[in-house]
Length: 387
Image 1 (cartoon, rainbow, N blue to C red):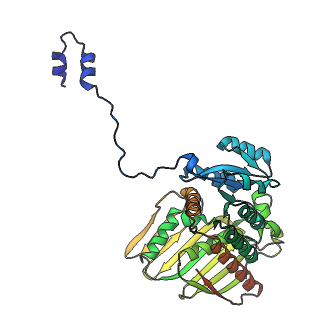
Image 2 (image 1 turned 180 degrees about the vertical axis):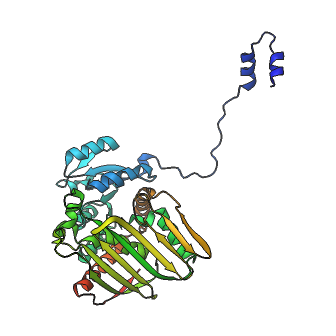
Image 3 (image 1 turned 90 degrees about the vertical axis):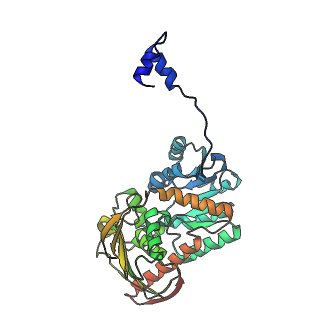
């Protein structure tokens, strides 16, 4: 209605009333269009118990459930009850367990899955106990202190007929998934070489670093903690290949008091059946923090730096007749929710997880081979390990 028409309608009606009458609409509902990926109702999601409430669990794992669509927090397990109760109040989690009554989770139907976020030296014990309690288990990386322990964990999962996964979150991180897609699509041509460098400077006065420098809790040194990212992520990009040989050298600085029990740094090389070489470095002695993966192909190359962080992974694509271009394809923080939802899906369907216990066992065998070569001053350790 024009202003002239509104004025003409003013016989016995104010301008505002006329405008209100002219603009009045009736609210009507619309049908649901498409097939949106709606989250399940809370009562239908699988319930998770978080075992270990350290810095990583509190800062990354637990907040990640806010974006999960198939998974929900159901219980906390900690030796510090006050901390567990405080976190429970924040996240609406009322079930609190400690390490003494841990096995009683077997009688708790609200718990479907258990996420082990303890120091490495405790992974095998609590994974096996959780499996015997009838729960599916996702265990933080590296899987265990040894291949023998990892094998026992795999055997326990089979005996319990439950899912066992290793928390290799990079397999769910959108930017790393995009690199895998481009490699498999042949955009880099034939992969010729991969390099992986991961490290930081360990601070013995910082509590989250302290247990990493103890053999009993850490299992090993930098390779167990940070170098395993480079090892596992590199092999993620080579599906169907096979490791046929391993060589390595220690690179720990002499007389560094931090490294009495574990190595400070190690350089390694994997020889693949395809002829590809994977070269990696792992260190507790470098600053600043480095997380870098490089994939060299016959037609183009990709560098990711950072590559495996929680929140800032990037892709630099070079070659292919185009100028270098840097980009991201998704929020790296989504990897935590995607990981637990992926495991919930596998547990519910009875299908293998994307990063199963067998993958963790494979990596433990490779880590032990790297140490064996370094102990022998770089001697070749023959392998026959399927990727």
